[in-house]
Length: 372
Figure 1 (cartoon, rainbow, N blue to C red):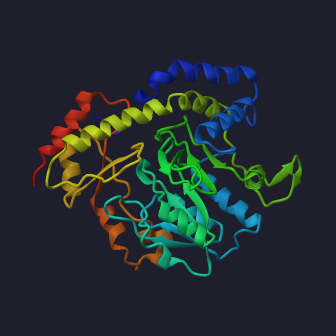
Figure 2: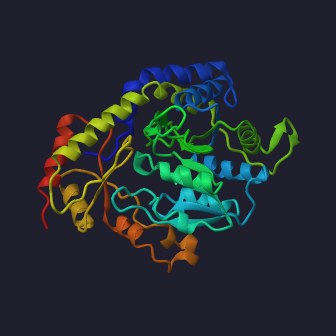
């Protein structure tokens, strides 16, 4: 059993995708055309924001947000950005690429999301933003985080690369609790449509969602060589665009995203209710679309080998935390024990909409039978 078989994942939409791609080919317009405009509108409507600006990938989405805030004067080089220590490295790469200083915050061992009880003590006079990462597909937003950002006037940026379609009840003093999607909870959000994501393209693609018109306009300009109109370059820009074929494919798959989320949640519920082994720890995750189903064990490497012998492929997200990577060697002596424990113990088991109930139960049986 493969961890994720992309051909299987895309098979139900193949006819629709082929038709959408054919329309792009027949139209003869491959960049900045109708397919991109249509996806941007559909995705903004789906997420619940005024604007969606497409770009080349998820890392660019985060980087463009920060670059735009620098250009708008809301951030200055050297400002601090709080970010989870337990995240895929792209979250942090975007910060350092823009000349900003990441401040790593440990996660909760139970949820693997940023520990909101540790945020306030990390805030200094140079702290200007918080990058929230909805890791594994779980919403990391809390009312406490919202209050801290408001009190300390922090820009709240969401890394929504793994949580397309995730919903959460947000406390609204005027209207009571309101159901909202991740990608609308902060001032701006970066999204990745890497092929393995719940909403995956057939190549690299990304987007930014926001309600801030000035931010959206600035991001769009920076992403097209810094041009505010053709051959007029107001910013030191870059080339970061989603092509028409990826946009056409994503528009097709977006129509099915809620069904994808429901099926992944069904599979996750089977795991949560049926896996029982004292050598394993299951995630305590709510409000998740289960891009990744992580389990944890002190015997992670032995467990991975055992599952491989049972014909079950797994992955590790992520084996080396960012502060132990060579590219950030100035952090290598830093001790972040919770992040380090997660990196030692985490194992991702198959959890995707192409799985049958029989395959899910096969994984359950293997996990329950694991011994050392």
